[in-house]
Length: 386
Image (tube, one colour):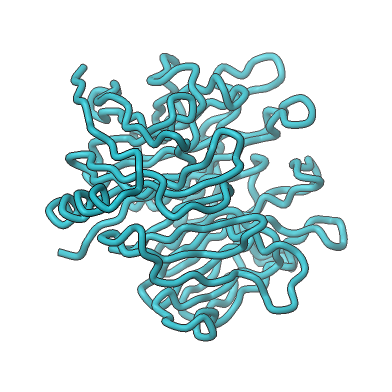
């Protein structure tokens, strides 16, 4: 096991920003981290160069319900419930907002609660709005907010059986010019056995929904597992992998109705790759995050209580899990595979930083990279153009 000690800038001061800008110009690739306080009273973001781990913390203070996404040399900080906006930054100036636009309609009373931006190209992307019936089609290069929204996708057909139940669009990807949108379809914040989660499929040229079922009912792909949250596309076998959480024990007992489900995009058939178990036998806990490297290696977080979680590796083709955790008894918030495909970056709330796993050996590679005083909650990588 190899360890290296990194010097982290704990203050967002001018010298740390200058050092970061110099480092990123040389390296080309960085990680952007959404961070939040222990009590979720505040948030900000950190940026870390991938190779030499130069870091700037506590950039651009905000609320704590944050997510990160990126496209080429820009990253986008999504402020969710209570803020309902997105801010765009360039990786070489992570402290300077390019723009900040709302995700609310002018007459919207409910919180739009944006949950994801999915990029087709520099001038077209999709914003999933968890608290709405419609996803937005937007131009990320718009220099005026009035030119930002350029269309929308109506997902009201997927509302739950209550008259006002939102479809809870949570995540999505684009593959082969098709947009796949994952919808949880919860009732009172929990999965309902009579209401399946769904994946809706749209043509990115026309933005029209594709009728996968062709049976006169909902057009999308029903899922067997409940409460999906993660989705990954693996081009080498043309498969989507969806991580489903089941029911987390927030208000009452956990329900083990989740796991990892695969969708073969050749014929849109679904297969449960990994079941999270049942009330008496659940060896990993709930499945909370997934990452897929290839058809023989993936990772997931086994969620116990958000305090003593474990990181496991598994084989996406067989569903076989290495039952020896790579990381044990930590609060693990997010997973991302680095651009080199050689490192797995793990958000470690227990120790206030990023833990890095060497993918070749599945062992810890470095000392913790501190994001203190805040905790990492979302990681995305961003690269400068060559």
